[in-house]
Length: 223
Image (tube, rainbow, N blue to C red; front, top):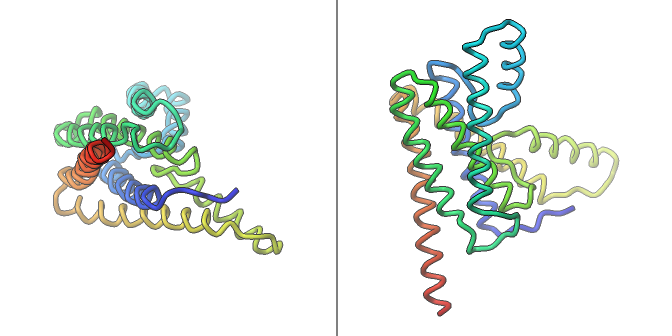
């Protein structure tokens, strides 16, 4: 199935993958060295912690999983379905993500695990938002699906089957955006430490505000 998404969705998906790359790198470089943008590794770590009866880690990791899920739940409450419409509350969701990232900064500075949970909640909200506006085509906080799509495309190419160029292009762009965000996040962390999260917070906050203003202008123009 080919991808038929508006241009702004493509741009938004790449931008959000860059944001997730920055946030995840800060989580890795922080005091807990913990991924916050995806849950596969964290779930494996939870299994190890349970086997080793490391109850402190169990509590921390369960908190991350719950926080990510709560973020996704919040996105579902705001946006409600998978229909791509300008009237959906994407701007509000992005503003909330920005607030969660800003909240994570002082918590990280105090070496509180709540910082990682706040960042994970922001990522869960973002990933659910991207899933909603793309009809489950786009994931912006992890890359397993994108690399899988690339691998499938290469397999089809070797078999002489038609290539889904739009899908492969989107996968490549999201991977590149996440990687660029990781490089940028690491560079910012070396200079600003946890204040590096100000950049993705400002990006999501300004985008959310811009979306709300654009929505109001569109409604005013329509009437």
